Amino acid sequence: MKKKFKLVLLVFVLMLVMVSCKKTDPITLPNANDSQVITVTKIEENKEGPTASITSKKDIVDTIKLIQEKAKPTRKQSNNDTPANTKDFRKMEIFYGKDEKMTLYLYQNKKFYIEKPYEGVWEIDNDTFNKLIGAM
Image (cartoon, rainbow, N blue to C red):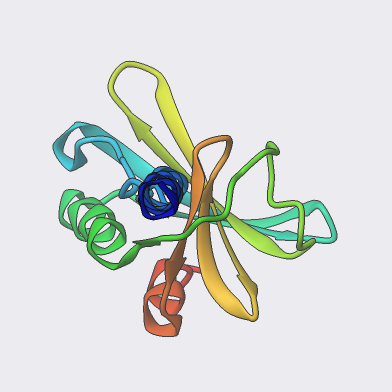
Protein backbone atom coordinates (compact mmCIF):
# COMPACT_ATOMS: atom_id res chain seq x y z
CA MET A 1 0.00 0.00 0.00
CA LYS A 2 2.83 2.41 0.84
CA LYS A 3 4.57 1.70 -2.47
CA LYS A 4 1.38 2.39 -4.39
CA PHE A 5 0.85 5.66 -2.51
CA LYS A 6 4.44 6.76 -3.19
CA LEU A 7 4.06 5.90 -6.87
CA VAL A 8 0.82 7.87 -7.18
CA LEU A 9 2.38 10.80 -5.32
CA LEU A 10 5.44 10.71 -7.58
CA VAL A 11 3.28 10.67 -10.73
CA PHE A 12 1.22 13.57 -9.37
CA VAL A 13 4.32 15.64 -8.58
CA LEU A 14 5.79 14.96 -12.03
CA MET A 15 2.54 16.00 -13.70
CA LEU A 16 2.46 19.18 -11.61
CA VAL A 17 6.03 20.02 -12.58
CA MET A 18 5.33 19.41 -16.27
CA VAL A 19 2.23 21.61 -16.23
CA SER A 20 3.98 24.44 -14.39
CA CYS A 21 6.98 24.35 -16.74
CA LYS A 22 5.01 25.53 -19.74
CA LYS A 23 7.24 26.40 -22.64
CA THR A 24 6.98 30.03 -23.61
CA ASP A 25 6.08 30.92 -27.16
CA PRO A 26 8.38 32.52 -29.71
CA ILE A 27 7.76 36.17 -30.48
CA THR A 28 5.08 36.84 -33.09
CA LEU A 29 5.56 39.75 -35.45
CA PRO A 30 3.71 41.08 -38.47
CA ASN A 31 4.53 39.66 -41.88
CA ALA A 32 7.59 41.54 -43.10
CA ASN A 33 6.10 41.93 -46.59
CA ASP A 34 3.03 43.68 -45.13
CA SER A 35 5.13 46.13 -43.09
CA GLN A 36 5.61 49.65 -44.44
CA VAL A 37 7.85 51.32 -41.85
CA ILE A 38 9.57 50.66 -38.53
CA THR A 39 10.27 53.53 -36.16
CA VAL A 40 12.64 53.43 -33.19
CA THR A 41 12.23 56.13 -30.53
CA LYS A 42 14.64 56.73 -27.67
CA ILE A 43 12.90 57.10 -24.28
CA GLU A 44 14.84 58.54 -21.33
CA GLU A 45 13.27 59.28 -17.96
CA ASN A 46 9.88 58.62 -19.60
CA LYS A 47 10.41 61.41 -22.15
CA GLU A 48 10.50 60.71 -25.87
CA GLY A 49 13.69 61.63 -27.64
CA PRO A 50 14.79 61.32 -31.25
CA THR A 51 13.07 58.90 -33.61
CA ALA A 52 14.68 57.04 -36.49
CA SER A 53 12.72 55.35 -39.28
CA ILE A 54 13.41 52.26 -41.34
CA THR A 55 11.62 52.55 -44.68
CA SER A 56 13.61 50.33 -47.04
CA LYS A 57 11.71 47.07 -47.67
CA LYS A 58 14.97 45.09 -47.44
CA ASP A 59 15.87 46.69 -44.09
CA ILE A 60 12.36 46.06 -42.73
CA VAL A 61 12.52 42.40 -43.76
CA ASP A 62 16.03 42.06 -42.28
CA THR A 63 14.97 43.70 -38.99
CA ILE A 64 11.90 41.50 -38.52
CA LYS A 65 13.90 38.40 -39.46
CA LEU A 66 16.64 39.35 -36.99
CA ILE A 67 14.14 39.68 -34.15
CA GLN A 68 12.44 36.39 -34.99
CA GLU A 69 15.76 34.55 -35.15
CA LYS A 70 17.46 36.05 -32.10
CA ALA A 71 14.66 36.63 -29.56
CA LYS A 72 14.73 33.82 -27.02
CA PRO A 73 11.65 33.27 -24.85
CA THR A 74 11.89 33.96 -21.12
CA ARG A 75 9.50 33.17 -18.31
CA LYS A 76 9.04 36.88 -17.60
CA GLN A 77 5.61 38.36 -18.10
CA SER A 78 4.65 41.75 -19.45
CA ASN A 79 1.90 43.31 -17.35
CA ASN A 80 2.28 46.97 -18.31
CA ASP A 81 2.03 49.31 -21.28
CA THR A 82 5.76 50.04 -21.02
CA PRO A 83 8.65 48.26 -19.29
CA ALA A 84 8.25 48.65 -15.54
CA ASN A 85 11.83 48.00 -14.51
CA THR A 86 13.63 50.73 -16.46
CA LYS A 87 13.19 54.40 -17.36
CA ASP A 88 15.52 54.29 -20.36
CA PHE A 89 14.49 52.17 -23.32
CA ARG A 90 13.70 52.20 -27.03
CA LYS A 91 10.19 52.01 -28.42
CA MET A 92 10.01 50.15 -31.72
CA GLU A 93 6.81 50.49 -33.72
CA ILE A 94 6.12 48.31 -36.75
CA PHE A 95 3.46 49.79 -39.03
CA TYR A 96 1.75 47.23 -41.23
CA GLY A 97 -1.48 46.44 -43.04
CA LYS A 98 -4.10 49.18 -43.08
CA ASP A 99 -3.27 51.52 -40.19
CA GLU A 100 -2.14 48.73 -37.87
CA LYS A 101 0.79 49.08 -35.49
CA MET A 102 2.72 46.74 -33.20
CA THR A 103 4.80 48.19 -30.38
CA LEU A 104 7.89 46.53 -28.93
CA TYR A 105 10.24 47.83 -26.25
CA LEU A 106 13.98 47.21 -26.22
CA TYR A 107 15.89 47.70 -22.99
CA GLN A 108 18.80 46.57 -20.87
CA ASN A 109 18.42 45.28 -17.32
CA LYS A 110 21.67 43.35 -16.80
CA LYS A 111 20.70 41.44 -19.96
CA PHE A 112 19.05 42.72 -23.14
CA TYR A 113 15.33 42.30 -23.72
CA ILE A 114 12.47 42.85 -26.15
CA GLU A 115 9.11 43.31 -24.47
CA LYS A 116 5.77 43.07 -26.21
CA PRO A 117 3.18 44.66 -23.90
CA TYR A 118 0.88 42.14 -22.22
CA GLU A 119 2.33 39.27 -24.27
CA GLY A 120 5.82 38.54 -23.01
CA VAL A 121 9.51 39.30 -22.70
CA TRP A 122 12.23 37.82 -24.90
CA GLU A 123 15.97 37.94 -24.35
CA ILE A 124 18.36 39.09 -27.07
CA ASP A 125 22.13 39.33 -27.18
CA ASN A 126 24.15 42.54 -27.05
CA ASP A 127 24.94 42.51 -30.79
CA THR A 128 21.27 42.12 -31.74
CA PHE A 129 20.30 44.92 -29.34
CA ASN A 130 22.88 47.24 -30.87
CA LYS A 131 21.79 46.38 -34.42
CA LEU A 132 18.16 47.08 -33.57
CA ILE A 133 18.89 50.45 -31.98
CA GLY A 134 21.65 51.22 -34.48
CA ALA A 135 19.40 53.64 -36.33
CA MET A 136 19.59 55.91 -33.30
